[in-house]
Image 1 (tube, rainbow, N blue to C red):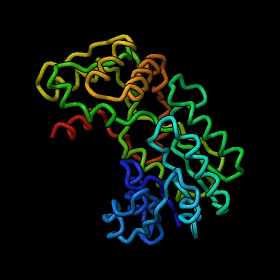
Image 2: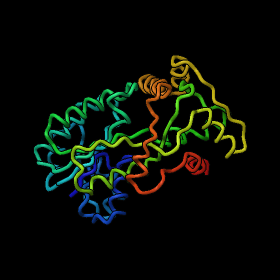
Image 3: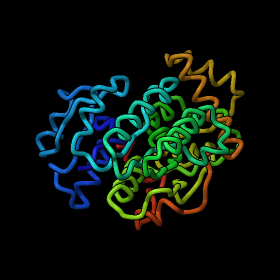
Length: 284
């Protein structure tokens, strides 16, 4: 059986979709979720739903029974990820998992993004565990920007602190397909995949695409890290999240979210989804 953590999350659910599309039987997939009552749609497909909380080692150990492979989708709780991931790793080791795939961050070892630190800690923990594992270093999701496309149109501006930094984004579905392929393939242990979109863009270019597709005027306004953080807090984001987002933009300006290896499209056997396609979907 293949277990997917965070299976009701945006990426985890798509990984399960990818596994089913690859012919994995529904009863050969374990959806590990914090709240099983939120996974009724997966249960109706025949997927096994088990309670598994990143902060509850007992639940994680119980969820691993009969499991051979694990997709560890990184926790969404920034600042708590390292200990939460360690709990999953400990449970996987006790269950003698034959392969664990972990969703890390692009170029984790050298990334200038503050977000990368917990991923580096997790990758080190995996190495120390001795569990056969493969690392999926995911770049930025296109949805990180397209989710707020309507707001950008409303204000006529895309805000950020990325300067001329390039984003080689891909959709969550693209990354989920890669995870589904890797966890169902042989000879993956020890591999590290740097995954990113085929085409990169600056935020100024993203704003221009928004304008072209919508027919409305949209410009990119580059702010300092402090200014951008304040704007995000002013629109209601928690200060910690605002700080991380602004730092990520600054990291992008340093090249932290760019990659032109085409590893992702090679792995999934098709081009990654262009950002303009993601914009069109978001504006429907």
